[in-house]
Length: 124
Image 1 (cartoon, rainbow, N blue to C red):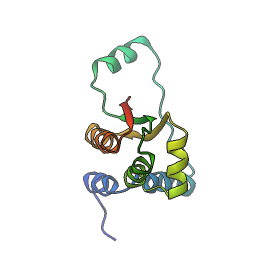
Image 2: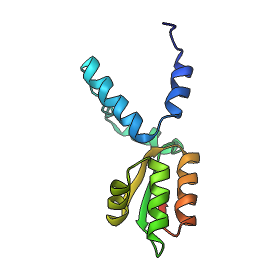
Image 3: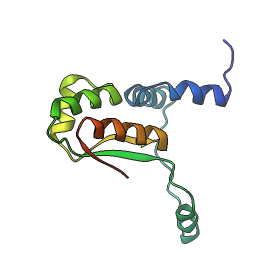
C-alpha cells in the first residue's frame, strides 16, 4: 500500500462529513489506544498569543428554527448527514450547535443555507 502524505490525508478528511470524521476518530482512538483530546496550554503568554491569532474554527449555532421548521430540518440533514429523527431533535432543541469546529468558509456556507431556510443562526 502506498504511503499518503500529510497533505493527501488532509484532502481526504476534507471530503468526510462531521459524522464520518467523528467515527474515524473513535476508530483511530480504539485502534491505537490513544485519545484525541486537546492539549491544554498553561500560562499567560500562551493566552496572549492565542488572542492575537485569527479564529480558525467556528461553531454554527441554530438559535431558532423560525417559521419554516421543515425546511430548516432539511438543511440540517444536508449539512450534517444526520437522519430525519436526529435532525428534527436537533432543530427542536435549539439553541444547539449544528456544526462544531468548522472552517470559516464551511461555517458561513452552513449559516447562509440555514438562514435561507428561515432559521436564526450565529457563528461562535
